[in-house]
Image (cartoon, rainbow, N blue to C red; front, side, top):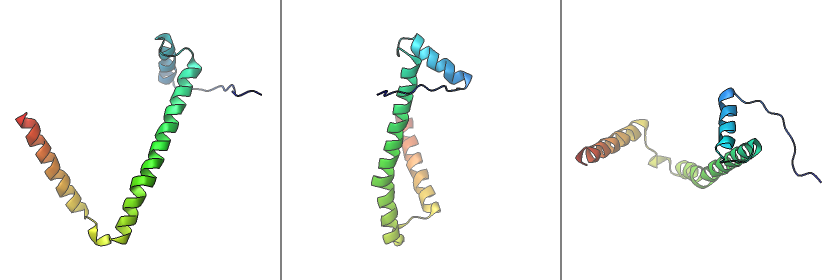
Length: 95
């Protein structure tokens, strides 16, 4: 039973050159290895986003729906971000 499948793909010139450069540098043995690694990275990113959504976004949304009185207005968020940025800039300028 065959566990791989040959595909013919078309890439923008810059991406094709990047794939070839990865092989030429010795970082990868074949162009297929470059593409496989890229796809594994894409799968890992998708899994990380899914985990973030399930573990952080959904609970935060559920908490907000349960306690809407704790929500901040856009103006409050902006003011807090401005204050944080000002504080960080002051610390950076002292360094």
